[in-house]
Length: 211
Image (cartoon, rainbow, N blue to C red; front, side):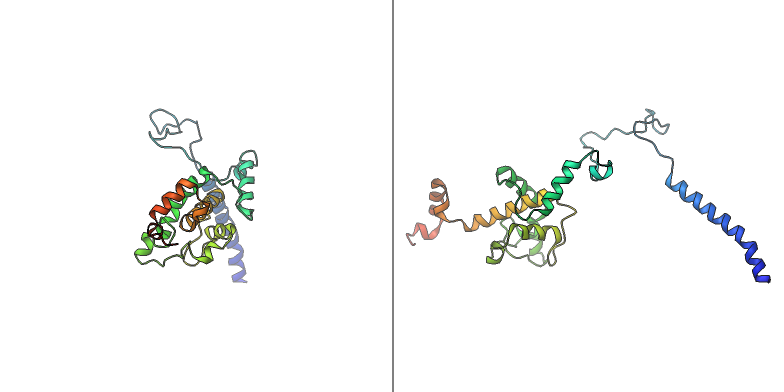
């Protein structure tokens, strides 16, 4: 009986404590904060919004379609979904795509894969496991989608780049990797005449007259 009485007396105190915790939790949800374009006595100009420092660019993160109830960014979301599901290269191969692919490749891939894609990058030279050469028969024979999936999911000791490289940029990198492969395995009879002539002049066996 005594223990029951103690319990009954303690229940109101417990409920009061829980109510206090709930109120404190909501205070954390609704902390005082300056609203965009609102006023504030914290700064000398009386404005809550701060002007970005000179030379900086304002950038917001997050998907517009997901953070605006579908009012903004729906087209971008549809393109991302299409790119993510494409079984093959969805973009037209042109200089713009290759330039974008090279830029992204130089940032994310070159340190390990090297400028020519042979796996002899600076990171590999310092002891990190060397990635396979893009110029191996196996990787020359894989599909574009395979290369895209490796960028997306990672492979072996290579981490996933899905959180750093957008789907469109992954396809641009795929196009550039194909260009790197072609650069090391191009057939002379498929090159423009002037380029083929320059290549023949540079190749040792061509200079020596060997077939």
